Length: 181
Image (cartoon, rainbow, N blue to C red; front, side, top):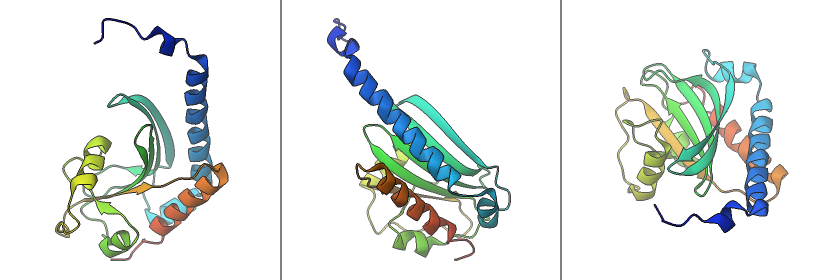
């Protein structure tokens, strides 16, 4: 800890308002993305879908984040979850978790730019981001009986509608993976 408080930063209303507006923008983006998919579409992909949920936090390694979870079944054997994460200072990520007993369309995810995450820490985004940034491209796929976490960084542009189209396109690609091995 520094001995001096950064009072000019603390009193910089424009900076605080700018960050809060960006959080609101991403919240709106995630709400629109979640509303663009029906419960029927989610249950067609995974029958035990528990719906959609947006979560917010401020301290993922000291940075705020927003999470949109679709399906929300976190069982390591039979679960499935589609997650979009806006992690301030780091980027926007799409994560797809498939339990051990689920169909594993590995080739489809590889062809769409996803990287295989660490199976031992499926919900630790910081560890996953570090893993994919340092992993070699020739890493072996896990055995068929192992759960998978696929992760992809999504590049965004400044236009909100274009960002929403990019996210919808990624979501549609994932939903098309249903039943493909």
